[in-house]
Image (cartoon, rainbow, N blue to C red; front, side, top):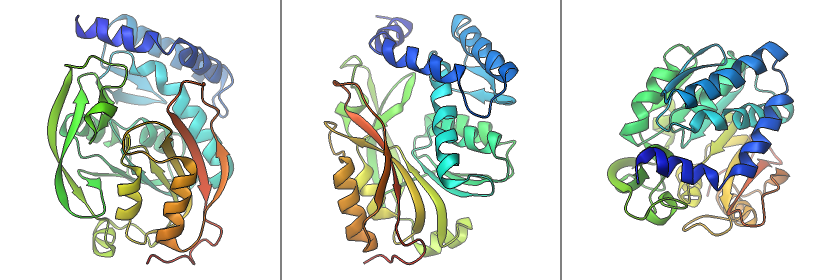
Length: 290
């Protein structure tokens, strides 16, 4: 089976999701009709021509999976939802599990005044991430992942599906061929106060985004007392190493001595294994780590 056939097989199992994304694009908040039409045409043209770059929200955007452009309207929708809650104009954002920058590009191109720090340890998407961020003055790329302690780890990823890369081989292979994963060595670090100061990350940030394919608990522990107002996190109902929404809240309460409020969750299909949640810390700037 060729890589293209493998890509088509993977996305064919998500037809309902793709149809929902097309509906999201039709009603994308903050995008005018011409912007929506341009994005629709760019996405499908890139897929049809088997390209690995397109123009996204006014600037070039590189990616590694042929069909990844089809998912981009979901990021527009997610960021619009977050802006209605957090107000992203001038916001400070930590983006953990950045991949090639789908989330970071959407935030910085729609809200140029926002400051984003994107963490990505996998060298394959990292170079694309750096190029995608090159035109944004307030977008900082950090070439390591976050964990409870400094370490090197194995990360598994499938060519063309680096966004599904995980420290758990089974998570990287969900819905894909069993023999298609490649093993990488990546650097993980604790985001200590000294490192935050070096990266010029403030003591309190407006938003933390976590999308790490089963390593959510390790990332939460590795934030080392970083205080935050809101968090958007992809949790797991059946993925190895992952947390449920309740477990994520339990972990936050252990670390920050305050239980976050769940203010939004996605409504997944019955067979879905992930749930996206937006959490709000009830006492911004007051909760401390253990």
